[in-house]
Length: 161
Image (cartoon, helix red, strand yellow):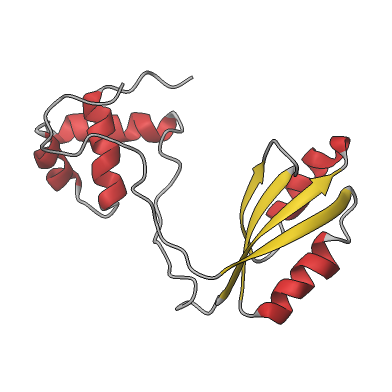
């Protein structure tokens, strides 16, 4: 179980969310802590699973994935675990969520074109054992929201929580 996050931990998350390539020295300076403290906190946040990894944000259209859709699935009640494992292996599925409501699973699918999206949904997902039905919503435009309200460096030690 992860230790509770203090204001410095949250400020570190904000700084890393803004720029995951920031050096430890710059991160420590921004947070007004020592480099040893910055290394220690970063190691703890990573070890505890609060930080799950570092990566690049890719524009899907510029990377050749011009068709995006949310695919909602209804599945047999006992099929979730095996279905989840199979979906994790399927190309073009970017995000998988078990949800409550009229549908059971929400997928974010990004493909090069509509024909590939059709193939993924109708030929591959529908062929999976446990899938009862689907609904596909094409994404015409998307953008990022403001994200979590982590206290930003320079806001002092106040924070949400």
